[in-house]
Length: 253
Image (cartoon, rainbow, N blue to C red):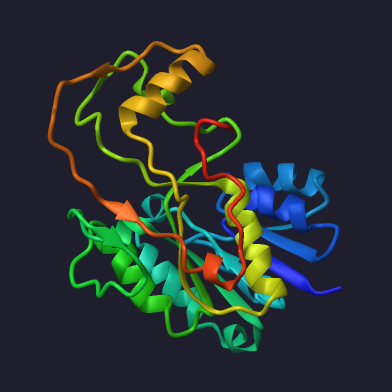
C-alpha cells in the first residue's frame, strides 16, 4: 500500500484523508496538539508540525505522495516555513508533490485568467512568493478558487450586512471536486499547474439571496453599485485531460 502525507489537515485536508484512507497509508500533520486526538480517532497517523516544531518532518516526508495545503495567514513567516520543507533532503524521494495555491495569485483586473497568463503582479504577494518558491520541486500546483462545500456556503458571513458590487461574478470550486482532482492527477500520473474553478459564475446577489432562503439567514443588504469587476477564472485545462467537475452549479448543492 502506497503512502500519502497531508501537510495542513484542516477543512480540506481532513476530508481528503478520510476519502483516501482505505486505499493509502495516510500521515497527517497539525499545527496544534488539540487536533491530533481528532485525527488519531479517525485512524490517521498524526504529527505536530509548525514553525517551532519540525521534529516530525522527516517521518512525514517518508511517503510516496505529498499534499501541501497550509493557510498562509496562520504563519509568522510562511515562506521560511515552506523553504524548510522543500529544502529537506527527503523531498527528492517523493513520487509526486501536490501544492495547493490560490487563484488570488492573479491580479485584480477585468479578464478571463487561464494558466498561460504571465503573472507580473499578483493580488496576493504571499501566494505569488510561495508559488515561485515551490514550483520547481512541485509536480502539481492547484490554483484553487473560493472553496465551498459542507457547512461552508456563500453569503453566510454577509447575513444582514452591506454587500458592495452585488453584480460581481463569483469564482468557486467545491471541496469534493478538489479531492477528486487530487485523486485524478495521482491515478493518471499527471503533472502541471491547474486552475480549479467551476464553469458557472453566479453573481454575489444571485447566490447570496438564494442561500439566505435555503439556509434561513438574513438577506444581505445589496448596494446599488452598477459597476463590477468581471474577473473570471478558467478551470477547463484539467477537463481537457479527462477530469469532470461534479459541482458546477452553486444552486444545486
